[in-house]
Amino acid sequence: MPRGRNTGLGIDWDFSSQEGLVSERGENLIHEVGMRCTCNNEDTYAGMMEKGGIVPRRRSTFGCTICRGDGYIYRNPNKITAIITSIRQSKDRVEAGWAMPGDCVMSLIPGYMVSGGDLVTFMNPMPLADGQVIVRGAGSADENSARKTGLKPEEDRLWYHAEKPIWCEDEDGKVYPNGTFRLDGSKIIHWLGGGPAVGKRYVLKYIAYHEWIAFTPPDVRFDRNRDLGSRVGLRKRHVAFLNEDPSLRVGECMPFSDRYKVC
Ligand SMILES: [Zn+2]
Image (tube, rainbow, N blue to C red; front, top):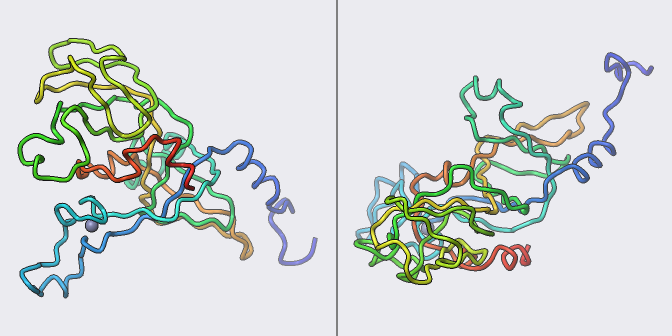
């Protein structure tokens, strides 16, 4: 064995089988580059200045026309394949305090970069574990009536593009079968009449295209100056952004199948 190439057992890293494993066994995903919207200004120096009554702020701007108030924008969608593992298999990360149950870890092929704040969407729909509790009509009630939420009075916003319902029930225990509402693959539930009264809470469990936010700096791995592919932590979007704005972006009003065609 040549000097300097000693890897213990003399076994070298097998890049072709690593790439093969990722492309054959990996998940199909859409990766979008995430970054702050220009309205989400955290510069402490700029924060001391006020121009024309506008104070740079730590929070996103109410009704921002670029990010719809979320404070983050997602650009350059790209279809990729990566290995996804549950955080349960990386218990040390939970114990170290930088991951929590429900997160997952994404292993990428060498040379592809995903960085903190990026958005990753699974292309295979899966059930939303706990379901989503929704207040009927919240998007157009009270103060939200002044917002441009993109929702009609008979519509409520969902966290994720919804493929089909599993169960829907309101706070009084009344069950709503599929047909009293419609899911069309977008992030909207359309009530067709006879739904819960405005202001009533209901829970909807549905099959959805899950979205994740990359939340840790990529864990770049090298072997003798060769990139072994990075590992990135992923957190469900509705957990990463607890108080996300109720407004819908253009891509969220369309079925998922139409959205990923543009990638
Ligand atoms: Zn903005």
